[in-house]
Image (cartoon, rainbow, N blue to C red):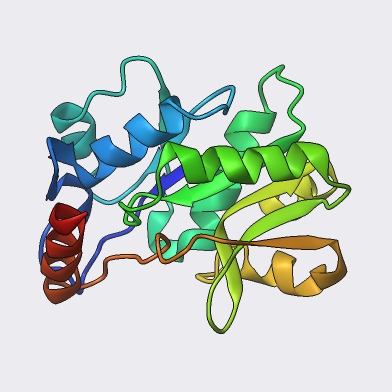
Length: 194
């Protein structure tokens, strides 16, 4: 589930459509999600949703437009989870990722999926210097909690509440997200040097 519903007010631009390599930030997230072992890719749009849909190729994936995207990331995660789980699919877990973490690649997503499949943990999450967060996979036991989220904190509270169930995985610096023009320019430079 790619979270791409935010307004990106600090960016002063439509962040999801910013150029990244031979695509855009949202195009890059889609490419990595589609080339991972995930069985289905759902993108949750909100602010500028119609424009993003028009400018991007969602042809082999699914999108939903959260009318309440202003209520924050948690609300959009809940909206996407309800959509996914309202279908007939029997999912083992839901992987939540952000459109504005362009260094997160399919190899890292596969590492999360492999760790989730082979461990007894009900949450596999990305380890940061001071916290644990997304990209993260939430097992069935947490689906109800995902659907009940309604804050701007996303799934952080679920992770905090179930710390003993969390397997932390290091992204080796790939989990940086872009909130400002300066961060975007800096990350573009880093990416071109790799």
